[in-house]
Length: 101
Image 1 (cartoon, helix red, strand yellow):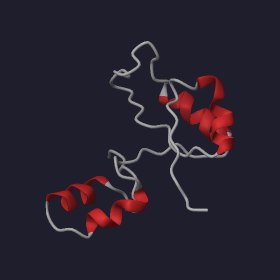
Image 2 (cartoon, one colour; image 1 turned 45 degrees about the horizontal axis):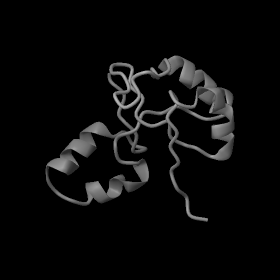
Image 3 (spheres, helix red, strand yellow; image 1 turned 90 degrees about the vertical axis):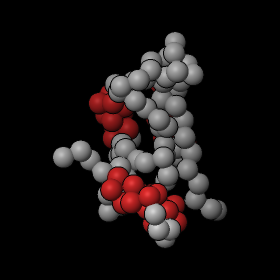
């Protein structure tokens, strides 16, 4: 079976975190500690530390990623220009978002 990324918005699925992780999701989507969910403003984002704790309790790691999944970054890096420069400066060695120093 091909590997696919499955996303579930945590602010819309809080009661089901464990079940969703057990079912195979690997992406909580665009969770922001700075902005509200403009599509579903009545459902605030969970606090990142709470989401991290629930995710890690199920044996997974909460990791910030770029808009491009890590497995597709090589395509961006194969092309010269601004996109390549931006991706290289934003990605860590595994292809996730570089942590602020």
